[in-house]
Length: 258
Image 1 (cartoon, one colour):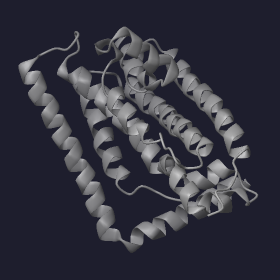
Image 2 (tube, one colour):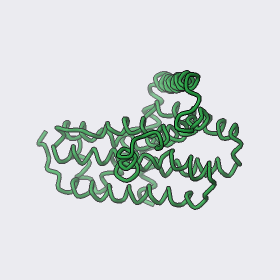
Image 3 (cartoon, helix red, strand yellow):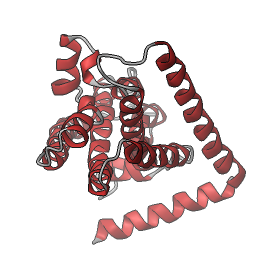
Image 4 (cartoon, rainbow, N blue to C red):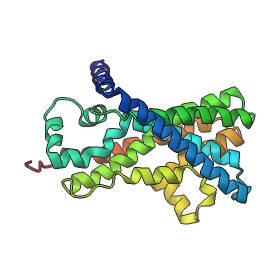
């Protein structure tokens, strides 16, 4: 209950900070919408040349794109500040988080909101619904894909925390959290198009293949409904493992003295 009240208070503060720069907020949303439209146009040009890639059609790729973007947008809307730990360390702000009697990750997550991500979230949601209807998926399949996406956003946060471990180990001198953006780009496409070693990495080590590829193949295509439970479970287990590792390093962190 205490953390729910704190989350509500943080949300009010973040919304007020966005309202101060309302034009920037709306321009940011509009800019991300335009960027997504341009990405889709580029993808359509590719499929005008090559109708299928490894058996996947343009609509299949649109579905993986929308699933991946929707999941990543949820991460950006609520967990984006996990990418900024190195900056917190370098400025000495991590010390102020650690001395408070509140979970450090909870504080880190709630100290900033990403105004641009809402444009991504809107476009990917509309695209997910549109493509699913075009492919004649039943309404419950669409709901399941949306449900799964909220859990797979934890995979992106886990990868960001894994990058944070490097920052904590090096006292902010190295930062691998930004690799989350690179892995997001890889998650937009089915695993089948990648080489065997990369498939293993994207399934078991940096498991962004679970974000869009597995939901497309197992839930949307083959209607194997037990994957609706397996994919969220995998996302949660991966997050718990990385969070425990993150906790080890945060508990042994020594201040930079800034």
